[in-house]
Length: 220
Image (cartoon, rainbow, N blue to C red; front, side):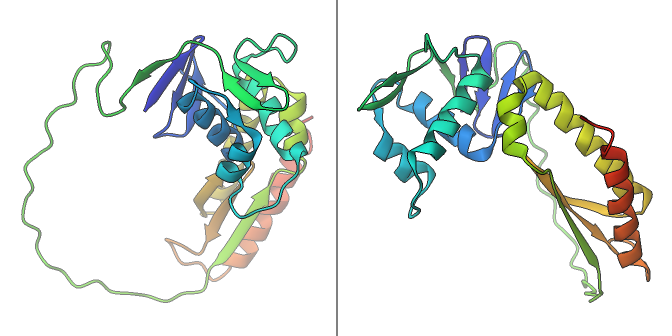
């Protein structure tokens, strides 16, 4: 589903908030909060309802919800004092106030040509899959104090910073012939020793981590 409001677009399939086609970095909880408020914009969403949706079977305080609301407002350019988009009704909850245009993600937009028909399925030749067990090294990296960065930086600046960090990380992993396996909002997991085997996979992972720290030390 696509939701468009105030020159911004929410893509629920790609889990992206975009402005002018440029993604704005959002944490998973903040994105889920924004989508839920948009979906139920016709009414007030209570705090208890948001707690149950965002943190099911968990106990969290009001500070966590307030932080998510603050990050969502910052990402969509909603001044906290005026609250023209996400309005707080004290003692009751929150309501999404901006006009929203809604479009099914399965339907092409008016400015995009329809997708070509899918090719006819073809029969596959059975083959034997050789399974190989091997030792690998897993490198897990995270950005320290990422929540503080989100609070301090404008969304566009945060996006460019994260983009630069992950580009640097990708180059280091590639330099030591590793595989970027999983990327999150504030970190990544890389594998060394696959798909190409290396006897020194642990050393390669360690060198990639050390050199990545050295390169990122200059980023403020």
